[in-house]
Length: 334
Length: 206
Image (tube, rainbow over all chains, first blue to last red; front, side):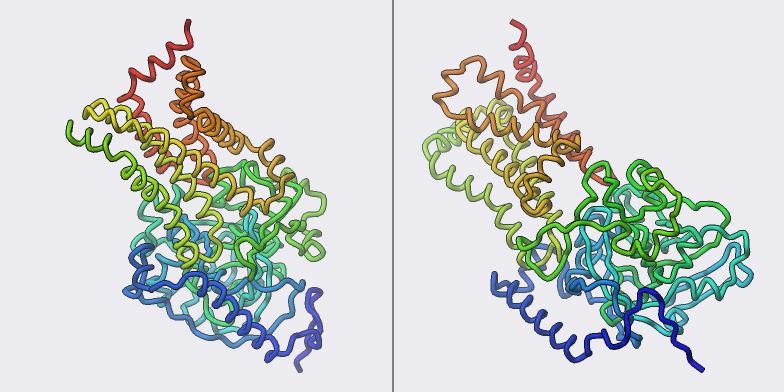
């Protein structure tokens, strides 16, 4: 018998916008966006390619449609248009400018892929590309708050990290989970050149405490906006932790290792006073070089139509995760 | 070279029109990049950064003019120095406005608190104030009125060239290669102009 367990952040089925209305709205918004940008300045594609690089010679990465269950969101925020979410990325492996990953990652190969789950587990796992899509998938609409004070609202497709961790059955002394991005300088120009890669030591590594990793909000995404991830957003599989700054949500993961000590994390190694291990979204703790009290929401309004909105503690997921940090001084453990 | 100098002097207006177009090209490039979405779905950072980088490029160009005119005996080149210098301030102003408008959503309160709190921003603002002061005092009438003080004031461009690179380096989340390249360039230029720099420093003695 199938018993549907309602998690605290799930809304009843009745609250879901019917699909045809959702799709109509989407296509309407899309056409409006297209008209808005398109009529402003008519241009030819070859001229763009000449001026700004890229162009037809570079075949675009092919994304596949996915089957999934819709999970209603925690909030009523409008989605970030897909075109913006896949062309504004921090993925220094492909360059430090926001448009670099979308330009430089189109040839990225995700097949074959190997994701290993090992360390302090009873049953180490090795997943290949098809295994990543083998379990039931859910679409979850989460806020993404970048440490640089911009934010998006993205429909991810994936599954709870806890599902896969449980399958590997962690040992009782596993206290942390360490993640690692692919290291392949041939495919990732930022790993080949320190200048392109922003002077970061690769591979990119991230980590969570085990209770954070097992939290039902924490997910591994294999898709977004209904299809598989594009490489600039972390294909074929990435972490999504919506109550933490975006840099925690590591992309293109090849290894998940359970460990008994706090693992090193890339931005913390680079600038420990600016980026902590926890990196929970916290409007009360400023980044030394900019405010975290407000954020620029990237939505379907134009460049000039945007206003800053207040940033919420834990990115608005505090009622679900604040208890993980009971008794901790979050200005110290930022 | 002598002929070229005469040519420059004779057709100053035509060259000025050409220079204006050349110095406005970056702005056109930016508009094209933004409207064609070549800078991605949210070009805010790209715009702010591009305007600053253009200001720095034009600043380096103004520093080049005096030694070039001396080296190649082209005194007519100096006729364009004020105009090019004003474009440094123009792009710096555009950079500040873009930050305030696009990044901070035109919130004056946020602009002031950020300015007060963040050292790299007040350093940038200090440089901007210097550029503004140089622009406002760039008229010939003011120049002759201020005399020696004018030279002292406008020599501030030398330290400002170094400070904007510090501001650039300070604003980066990671990496140092690009500011280092600019630093090497500006230091080399100031060494080439070291007599002028020395004269400027000595002018504060007496």
